[in-house]
Length: 221
Image (cartoon, rainbow, N blue to C red):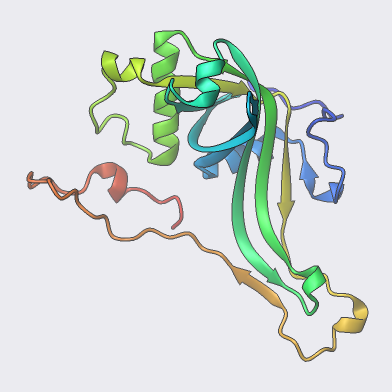
């Protein structure tokens, strides 16, 4: 069962700059994670810090992500590796009269913890399904699912959401009083993510129409 994070957040995820923008509420954290689909996973490798972009999916208290066993992190981590997982949703550019007060409206989540390598075959499939369905709901049951050879070429990890925080900025620019009367436009320039027309694969010979997952996809609409 999903539990609320402790009222006093872990120092590793406590916001020190502009703490009023922070939230440690699981409902807020989950909502941001469920709207995003791309995360960045940072870890300390044998050659220094590394940050990798990857798709992810949340299921209850866990975020699942995957990669090739040949990748650096997955090759050196036989059991667990400490990671920082970040998701950011950009909502708009904030233009102030002064360059100093330019900003961005955004929603972000940072989760820190051990990335546990999933070994149970049933949970591996569950994690891959969570990733697929988070990116394109309905696609897991439309396409051919992974076979044994493909599963051996895929490593699935999970991180538990026990140390996580959200940071959110909304609203107009915060200009200094002396700048408000300057003859400079100020406001918010929204950033809207959209969907283009699907492009069929060059070797698509079947007359089949668009799959239901694409027809019903409404993430950004």
